[in-house]
Length: 120
Length: 269
Figure 1 (cartoon, rainbow over the protein chains, first blue to last red):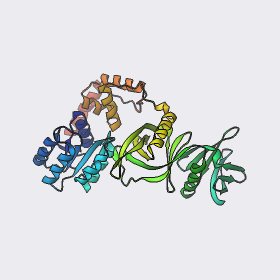
Figure 2 (figure 1 turned 180 degrees about the vertical axis):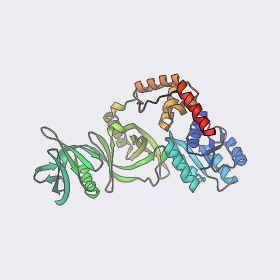
Figure 3 (figure 1 turned 60 degrees about the vertical axis):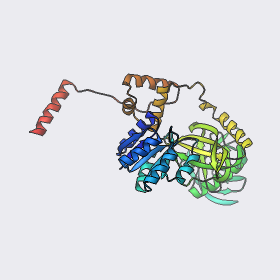
């Protein structure tokens, strides 16, 4: 179990992830609605893991991931991409992401990926 | 011809026979006494460790065969290579995505896509995977990054044990278009035309997909039970959801309240 920062520009997806992660026994460290806010919240909260949407206003998920990895090279970040954006996965992995989930997602798979990344 | 041990359903009973398997046919000796040309098979299904062959004839015959995995793999490979079906050589990745998570160690395999009456088979020398047509959720011509290049692929989504599994097919664009059209025609029962949902109905459908129960959905969307029930009615009517269980909400009667009060007193004394 770990503390998790959820980053997504839609309240709906944040709420959904929050519910899934909470049901899996994780603690929600905080939420951010864009990449800029994500970096600031990461500095402040030092979560065990971040779930990061790729397409977001202001600073996108890939840029936010790079900034977080600069702050903390050991940061564990799981990218959330929409179906059809899996090509972003390669870029995200190159930038230091530890895992990825594709929207729409199913709760057991999300929890499995989070467990794997937390154990890594 | 190679001889292999098989169990074949014959007159409602399973009988063990030594079948002769060739490149183009299988011969089942007595008591079954049948020679089946692979090209006369127009449907192949796999149910657990049983292969169900539908053979053209008058009337069509259904043959059920069981054997060890090694033998079934060989049989499936031979049948899929010659049966009466829509077939094309292609690269495929199956599964590529399972439940929204990219499958680990997923890789492109060289083989063929074989569309029979009841399903779509992804077949290579090493594996044969069947997606039953009723389980197909979506077919889309889309683009994927293949070796750093944006490439046209067909994505086939199907539902397996409650999870959405995506498979990808890669071959020349003109062939992909033919495949996509053929598959869309073969699965026209899943046509989504006329299935329009408003924003809140879509959110509910998405939450159901993600595995949320009614209580969680009501809390997340802050909607009353009655409204959620109405949304369920709409999505059930559209055929995009089905009732699995009906739960009951209860409240305690006076007797129940008295029982709990007494029980609490007993515990605290």
